[in-house]
Length: 84
Image 1 (cartoon, rainbow, N blue to C red):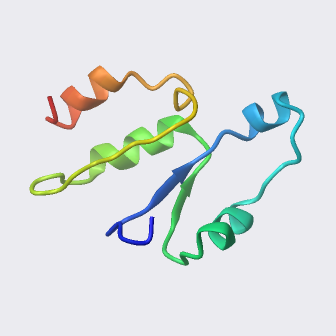
Image 2 (cartoon, rainbow, N blue to C red):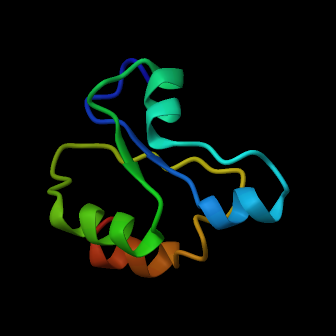
């Protein structure tokens, strides 16, 4: 994510615990990505609220996941962000 103007990471601590993995901290995530300006969300509703507060004129939004972002409805999010 070095080339991203703004980098955001979302992870769900409950999913990590459910998978019986060791808990991770926001500090560990920031260190792993080596970006002090990294925004980190652990609540999908807060992530959606943040994205809705942003302006996406002349910008690209790329969301990548190995899961479903804790059930975010991407069609609705796209409509809310005027991305469809």
